[in-house]
View (tube, helix red, strand yellow):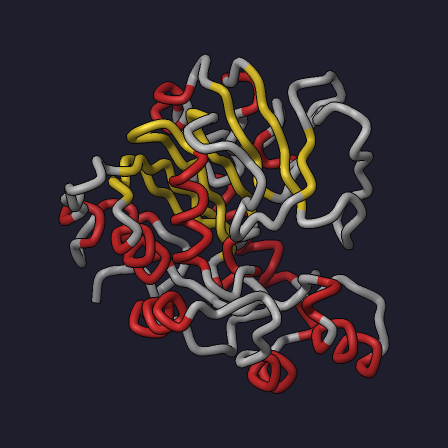
Length: 279
């Protein structure tokens, strides 16, 4: 880590970016039953920046398979994100949740997963199905400017809508060539050779390593707005996270997210990334 990185880290730590999010991000889901997509996630733990696990009455988990590049879980064991049994562990695709019951959870939580879905609007629709009416979503997504995706173009809402309309599935490799060309491996911690790295992403149906889509703050919020989510809280934190608490609107209602989508919205002024800030 060079001196510029040290200085940048220090600047944003002094600005509070290393501290847990305010209670307003957690209070609405306190005592509720959660379903985590793609966990466990340290960010949601007691010492994390979005410590929501301790607030929930219980938390079930779902992974597309028990053993992944990130976790090695056991289908026969309970879901235990902080070591103690919290709920049931399901093996199902987090983008469709096939086989999971309707209206069974109060809140869906997910960290650094939404970018791995080829069809995130379809995923959000599936999450809505398993939630109670006006259920909550606790979402953490990587900000493109702080990750190895910083050279890639941000995904537009039109592109996401087209994927949804086309029924794009997880075997889609539309973004593979872009990833191979623009991914900044200097910011990637894996130890694979270039050939191994490219092969793993080309086999994405069996690895799920590919970031199909990349987001800045605005584009993530536009996607959530399109999915009929009322965005209650949002914060962008150094080094690379967008934190959102949102709630699905009633079936025939479109939420008013004007306040968070404005060019002078407070979250923009506090973002560490120039692409978010008012110009």
